[in-house]
Length: 240
Image 1: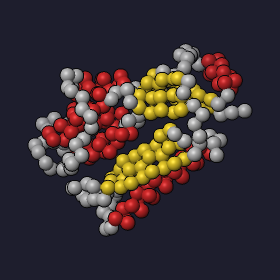
Image 2: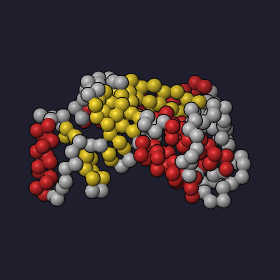
Image 3: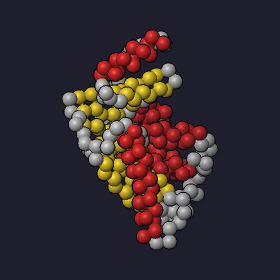
Image 4: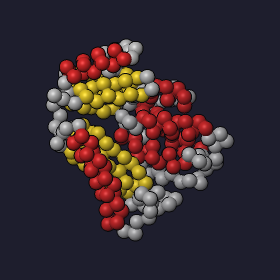
């Protein structure tokens, strides 16, 4: 026996299984009912590049980053070592408004999608995504900096090693009153399954915390909710 997982997006299907015989049976059954083309091992799907090796599977969005750089008009820009300056605190009403915010919104939306394989920019993208309604030139300059950073690290991504354990390990933290406009704290967490990072988030808390203890408990609560959901999902997939 085994499990089969099937993912459908419009007319594209990704299938994986713990049992190769079951996988073959499903593909045969589907091909008898629908006109299908088997493209073999997964290499590219919705901007995700999949690389197979004896040590495991790795994911990145190298081509997606190249397209993003072109959209931003930064092909000749120099890559930089960090996505944001450490001391920068973005404010809602600092600097002049952009005459046309559409490009800003498009770039931020693309960066949000990029966090699918780049958890290290989640906090920075969360920062710039706060200003979609009234973006300013300083906010756009910050977006450009993030893009210059990912341009120089476009092959970075996620790794899923062979023989990985199913032990969950979670880390979380919070930045007390990290938002200078609302004084809401910013929560972050990451969850590892063995040595593989499988879940992460950077999110502004929905209310002002009156003490450092309060905002830490809120951060822990967010992380626990994610742990409970992941444990349920893993049990459904027959991983204890």
